[in-house]
Length: 164
Image 1: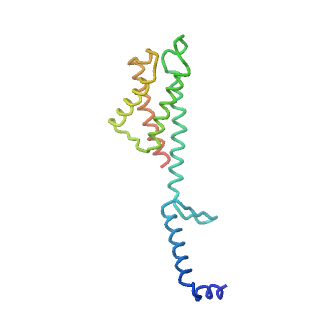
Image 2: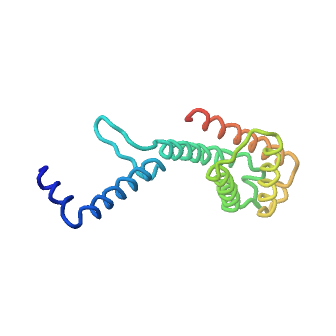
Image 3: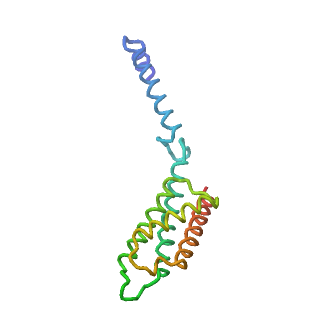
């Protein structure tokens, strides 16, 4: 084996082969360091586990968020009345879920009162833009939405802290 390696490096292409091996080793090292490449064997793990951890946090937050948002379906006023459109209510919940999912994916959720207030107003405006039923435009339902947004943000932060 050593004779074969010696013959490769002492031939006319030896310096180019050595340079090529050096470049390949450097590329592998850079990919491992940046977290794009992870080498795992039975006893040794080379590379970052941070990306997998972040994916796990986002996955847990989004699963919890879906349950939390659809739990508010029973609190929508006017259910069971003749003018209430069940599919419209589910559509509004889906829009709210997608907006909150953006918060998770952009990973910038904060507990500051200013941040929570901005998100509460944004979600309330989304609801008002899509609602037809006047019973939903009441201050009581607005309080339910504002409290729900605050609770959801606090729980999303709690999930992040738990898994970090």
